[in-house]
Image 1 (cartoon, rainbow, N blue to C red):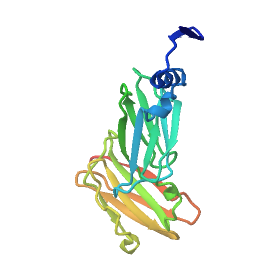
Image 2: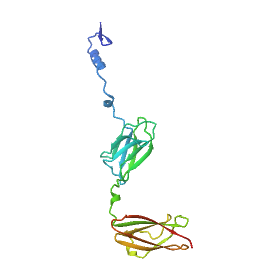
Image 3: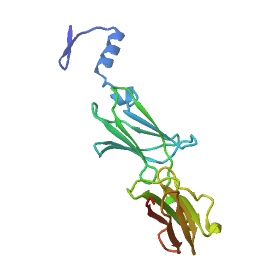
Image 4: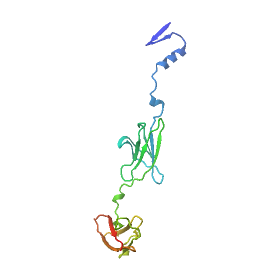
Length: 220
């Protein structure tokens, strides 16, 4: 004898195993998300220069400057961005402000998580730190406007010079000089074979704390 169930026909039997098989056949299948772990295209591990996990940092996956995925690092410094297009060059951006890191030209793997390790140090706020004075970068050039190294910065007030100041121009023609608020300097810039120059500067509270000055030295 045949029994019709929907579009299916089964021979009637008294065997209990047949009833169990029928129930299993008609039962709904589990959703794919329940049967396997979710696949993520990118796993971004963010750590500090000292090797500690960086928690709560924004991570962005972008394509040609357009944001296509975002995540935030967890307590282990891990951010997972699961959906990404194949065959495209992608950028991973870590952080929003000072010290932000971008790893460029990455491609997603087929059914394999791509791990990206990033060292990130959030320097937000450092640019507003109180210096207590002015930082001068004095660039010495020759009369062809090329950097001139070996120029001696002979300041008349050596007590006003901070330890980090450099008294001789380097390969790029740079001399670094720090001046405390409320002070000034008069310096001679000298190098054998060149006409000396005199440079005067001051630093007042509320003025621009970062200064760049270019001085031209001509040959005799």
